[in-house]
Amino acid sequence: MNRKSKIMMPRKQNSNIHWMSIILLTILKPGSLISDPGPGDIYREYVYNKMLTFYEKEVVKKEAKLIIDDLQSATRAELSSVHFSGHCNTGPKSFTVNGNNSILLPVPEGTAEHPDLYFAFLAGNNSAEIPLIQLKQGENEFVFTDGGCSGVECCGWPAYEIHMFVIRIFYNSSKSHPMGKIANPFSGAKISDNVHVKAEANATSPESNIVRVDFLGYYEDYPFEGAGPFTKWHYQYPLGKSKDDRPEMISWCVYGEPPHIGTDTTAPYEVTWDNEWIPDQDGMKIMARIVDSNGMFYMTKAIDNLSFKHKDKIVKLYAIQPEDLPLGWWAFPTRRGIQKAMFHVDDDLKNAQAALLVANIAQYGVILLNSKQVHYKDKGMDRHPRTSIPLNSIKHGENVFEVTGKTDSEHLHTCWPGPAIKIAFKRK
Image (tube, rainbow, N blue to C red; front, side, top):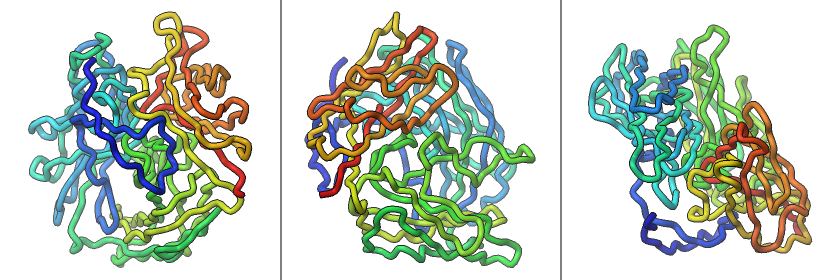
């Protein structure tokens, strides 16, 4: 396979991700990841909470219908999905809205080769823009397709699955919506372990009340959401249903990693952020997502320029450089053997106190670090392991991740951006 042209990129001064080298590759990626909700946004969410699977070994289409009852004062629309990319080189994965032109589903950012060549599990923090003109008041029809094989290293079996999707309608400021702001900390503050985060929130309509306040952070960390860069607004999207079997639009899916800073449902709206394994860094931001009983969402203005420093330790994240991540990295011992990926730990380990394995995976199997087993699950699903690992499994310099299975029934899929480790060092 021909490699794309390489571009050397300067490293951010506050970066705590330790790559094998600082190289990004230029590549044209389908499924543009637009903004998602950001500070000041006002919107509603319409959720389709049934699974759509594409495993028929041929190009198929699956239909989903969703009622959208409020387009008044709308300014834009987007689709966010929770989906597993399935077999490598299935694509292009796309959908249509009410019989209009196809729109590509989001794909991971930053891959060294075409995104369809990697396994990926996108947990909803992604979006594809939908032209407002394609939507209508009332029932809307969404048709998804797997697109077949894209023709490059295709396994011959196009397949993927959509666990759920949400249609998000954004409105202008004239739309009645809840209001509020972050009350603690303040922009420019220096924060540390277990920081206290507080918001003020109030309903502006006499017919509504505040249902909950979610606190979201923008910072550098492992992207469990599976779609984008390490530095972003970190959160995931809900799975499951509410007690009356209606889609639950205001809970968050949790695959082992707290998906956001925290949530409070009663005033005063405040949480303590469990940031034990967040890397030390500058430039953090925090905003609140306020939800009212009318189904309106409001993102507060973000407080920014936060400086985060653990009191007694320094946490660093070590990840595989994008071009060193194997294509279609999965465990199938008799067919594929053991596939490897290298990363470097350039820091002196004599002051290391603890270490954590983090990953985005599907199915089950074994992860080895320098030939030592650091993760194993023989059944069920452990999508986002956060596993303590022995310090003696880590070496100064070159380290090697391996993925395999003890039998051919164990076929762990290593999803973008691959496994990584966090190390906590004693602060001098």
